Length: 253
Ligand code: PGA
Figure 1 (cartoon, rainbow, N blue to C red):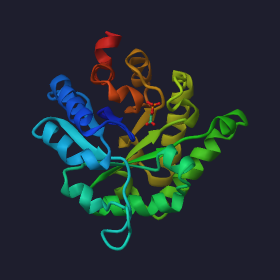
Figure 2 (cartoon, helix red, strand yellow):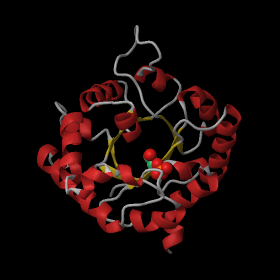
Figure 3 (cartoon, helix red, strand yellow):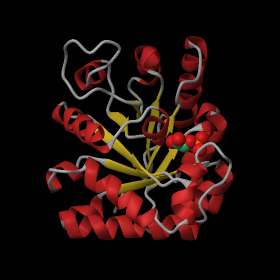
């Protein structure tokens, strides 16, 4: 069985005070949840303060990006080892905002995955198509291309230590969610492709859905056979909404 994993991506939001207040509220609501794996990914500069808030709870800490090198002359960058050092377990890599707003490419994401795995972080590898790509029927080709590129040279042992997030770019921050049918179709296709390429390990891989996940649509998405959690942006900035998503089972009951 794949335990669902629901992670909040705070993106470039919150002040220090807002970050610690939000983390404390998430802790109050979710510190003992264990049917779902829960994580939060604040901005780099608040990681230590948020780590203090969620220490000794079931809530895991993650970062939103990292460089691939362990250290050195890379002004402005943060290494995987630094993230590990301040208590991170996850790192989000290849988010569409980095791909499309900052020009990040699959070969860079490939190196970042390698760097993150080398220090024992769990990468959350994001892939997803643009609206224009979906409309011309290119969704499968785009997401498989992203997988091919970012996973180049990796074996089953690496895939086993990752989480995948399918995030249709047209659904991120837009209030438009993929229908359950659309999400399941892509997730099942990804798993089938990964099974062919990496073998049975694909059956244990958790594939999150991301894109305008809210408390009122979470249950319908999470009950899909190949959807194993969510990467949540906007709604993760509201502790009640985030808790509502994590407790999706209560909603469907
Ligand atoms: P959203 O963002 O939930 O605000 O659509 C999702 C994401 O970018 O991970």
